[in-house]
Image 1 (cartoon, rainbow, N blue to C red):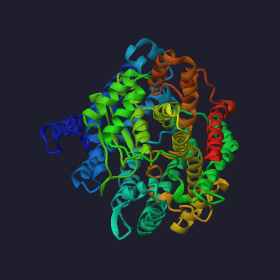
Image 2 (cartoon, helix red, strand yellow):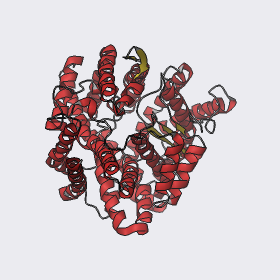
Image 3 (cartoon, helix red, strand yellow):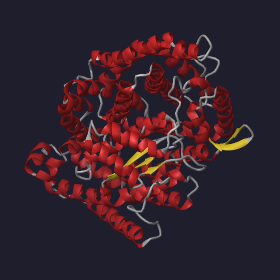
Length: 586
C-alpha cells in the first residue's frame, strides 16, 4: 500500500503545460473580473449574475492549483517551488481584492435582491451566499483599502503562518541521543513505556525552546493584524468577527460553554483516576495524558487500519465504506511522519476531482485509527457537498468538525460494544475519554488562551515567557485538579497551527461544538437506525448553504438551549462513570 498520497490527478508538476496553461487562464480571468467590477452595469440582475459566473470560473481555476501547491508544501515545508507558487497565487488573487469589495458593496446596496433571486434560478442557487454577502457589506472597506489589506497580508499574516509551519516542521528534537522531528517525538506520548513518555516530553519541551522566539513573533504579529483589521471594519472583537464568519450566534457559543464549564469536573475525575491507575495520587502528569491503558496497547499497520474502518463503517453507511476503500486504494492518504512534514492531521477536500487528500502522522496506535476515521469523516462531508455549485462548497468552522467527530464516535462506540474482556473494554473506553478530554478540557484551555492573547494584543507584545504563563493558566482552568500543576506543557502555543491564521481565529471551539453536536446526532442514530442516514446526509449537504442553527434544526436541535449541550455531556459523563467502575475493579 502507498505510504504517500498521489497528487497526479491534480497535476504532475508545476512546470507542466497543464499547470502553466491554468495559471495563464487564471491570470486572464482575474483581469476580466477586475475590468468588469470597475464598471458594474446598471442592470443589477445581469450584473450580479455575471459576477457570480466569473467567480465560478476563478474558483474552478484557482482551487486545484492552490490545493496542489499547498499539499506539496505540507509534506515538505522546504519545497521552494511549491512555496513560491503559493506566494504567486496569493499575490494574483490579492490583485482582485478591490474588485471583490466592489461586487460585495454592489450586492449590499441592491434593495431588490430578493426579487432578483426569485426571478433567476442561477441566483436562486446562490440565495444564501447573496444574502450573507448583503448582510456583511457593512463590514467591507473602501475598495482600495481592501486591496491594500490583501496585498499587505502576503508579507504579513500569510508569511507569519508559513514561518510557524516551517519552524515547527524542521526543528529537531534530541531524544535519547538521536535526532527526531517534532511529530515523531510527540507520537511517543502514546508509548506504553512510562520512561519513554517522560523522556519524549522532556525532549519536546526542550525542542520548543529552540524556536520559541521566532514563533512568538509570528503569533503576536498575527493577532495584532487581526485586531487591527477588526477595528478598521468596525465589526467588533475577533471573536465576534469569527462568529459572524461562522454563521453562528453568540447565544449558541454561550450555551455550549456554560454547559462545558458545568461538566469540567467530570473529566477531572477521569484524569485523577487514570493517574491512580498509573501508580500515583493527585493530578495526572502531562506526559501521561495519552498513556495507553488496559489491553488497548496493540500496534496496527495501515492495512489493519483500512480493514478496521471499512468493517465498522459499512453497517452504518455503505457509501462511506466505499469512499474509505477508495481513499486507501487510490492513494488519498499520506501516512507517516518524516522531517519537513507538518505535524498533526488534516483533510483537504478536492471537489473538482470528486476526491479528498488526508495528511496523517501514523504511528500504529489505535488512536491513529481514530484519527483516520476523523479525517475521512471530513472526506465524507466533502462528498456530500461536492455536487453543489462551485461557490457553495465552503462550510463554516463549527459544522466543519461534525462529520469528523461523528466518525470518531461511530468507531469508538462500535469497538466498545464489541469488547467482552473487561480489560480490553477499559482500554478502549480510556482511549475514547482521552479524545473527549481533548475536545473538552484542552479545547477550552486553547479558547481561553487565545482570548488572553487577543486581549494582550490590544496593548502590546507578549514575549515567550508571558505566552507560556498564559498557556499554563489556561491549562489550569481547563484541566483543574485533573492535571499535576507542576507538569504542564506551557509551550503548546508553538505547535498548534490553529492559532496561526490571519483569516481564521478561534479555531478551537469548533472541536468542542463538533464533538457535542455529533454526540447528539449519534444518539438520534441509535434510536432511529437506518432512517437516520438520509437525514444525516441532507444535514451535511446543507452546511454550506445555511446557518449553524438552521442546520441543527434539520435534526430538531435547538443550539441556543443549554439543555441540548448538557444532554450531550451527560453521554460523556456516563462513560466517565463506567471508566471509574472498571478502574476500581481493575
